[in-house]
Image 1 (cartoon, helix red, strand yellow):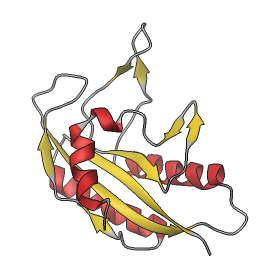
Image 2 (cartoon, helix red, strand yellow):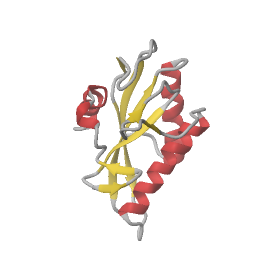
Image 3 (cartoon, rainbow, N blue to C red):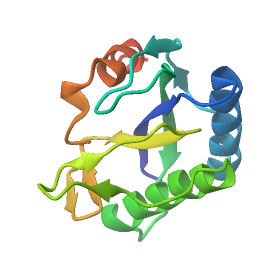
Length: 152
């Protein structure tokens, strides 16, 4: 069975940030049926794209997951997205993405954010799912933790 490395970015700036990340990781392990294969250190960062007094705690995590036979890359990627969004909801994240009149994203503080950064060398370009994550190279809070685990 084919396996693929899935890299996720996690961030939180509300409540007990370390506990939020640990809960998200526990949910991910449970949802994927396996323990992560690599985890970066925790990185405290300023909010990106909006102002808040609450600093973020960020990390990157790697899962090596089996791709079920007969499952397309699109189906598998959508499954990963569903898992991430479901965990965000379980942890209390509410609302849908907001956009300014110019089309730019409006960001807010959040209890958890789980972004798909990479799935192997796959490329997905859909309105609500883009892999690799299109803004990851612009964000040190993504690239620094991700670089820690890319070789593991």
